[in-house]
Image 1 (cartoon, rainbow, N blue to C red):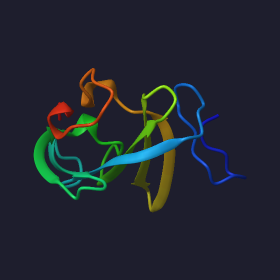
Image 2: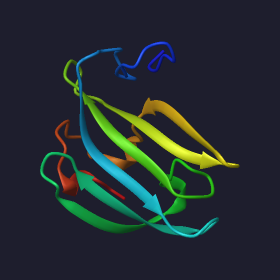
Image 3: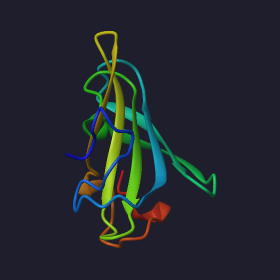
Image 4: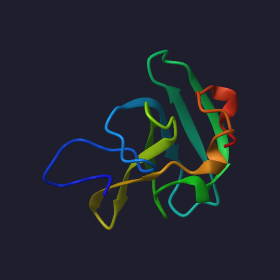
Length: 116
């Protein structure tokens, strides 16, 4: 389990490692049920920001705005995604593997590595 309701720590979704770092914030925004949305990409630590137009299937929310935080593991250098979405008036969280199609094969984050 990568997220435990009785504990606050988030573990790597790949290896279970506990030493992780927040690297990037993606805010998917756009109208409800839109085919395309804009995503704000903010590299944490540097404040670098990019805005891209993407298909809505990258959004962790099926219908509305969604937030995804990219977390990188110190042990295996793989990425985990913490997502926050709204669904029928409720705010939901999830922790899962960061979508591979959003990252290049390189383990270190760079804005050019995002395929969105």
